[in-house]
Length: 217
Image (cartoon, rainbow, N blue to C red):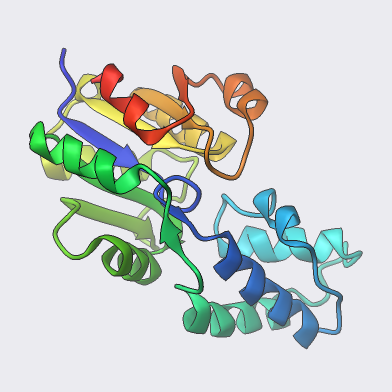
């Protein structure tokens, strides 16, 4: 069955958002009296939503009892609201991929663990309104990734069955999400993690450049 839609992860797949997360989290760490991390450490803090990112940063900083959890979480929300688009940009090849998919008549969706409002903000700032057919961020209405709820919601809203969908992401969370939803799952090597992680989490395919996705349609 030919594919009719591509569901994209956001951070590390469509857009390079690492600097926005790094800046916000390091400022929040400073607020609770803890030292900052180098940016590459955040590649492994991200992927499961803001709450988990804050927990991982605290634990890595020695706060294993999460004494500063509430304070840092509040600071992170404050800073991230300000810096959500700090040096954020689409990855090379992503705009061309989106144009090619639209020319072929495919539906486009985003499934992110970023809060819904932030997901919409980042997508519309970088790609404009109307590029994607549906944007799904973290909300109280659905379990966050790696639960398949967001994928199922997108398929229901767009009238799709799983055989018609490709899911593209860059982390183990994305591979687990796509596989648990039963859709064809592709790993992106330009994002936050490496080939080994994608292979260990059973990616159906792994690509080095966005335009390679076209051969899996």
